[in-house]
Length: 72
Image: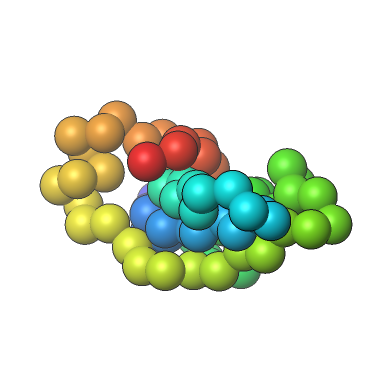
């Protein structure tokens, strides 16, 4: 029996023009996958970067599901 792939909740900051920075929590297998998921919603003038991660307990409290993206 195989175990499910390990996922991490990455924090992705999105910068756009003069707007406030938005930070998304994305539960993904890699930072690249998390960036790609947020990038699906991005426009040309947005810049994204990984700014951290969340611990397992916080992910459980938030109820974050695999491949889910949530504004925090």
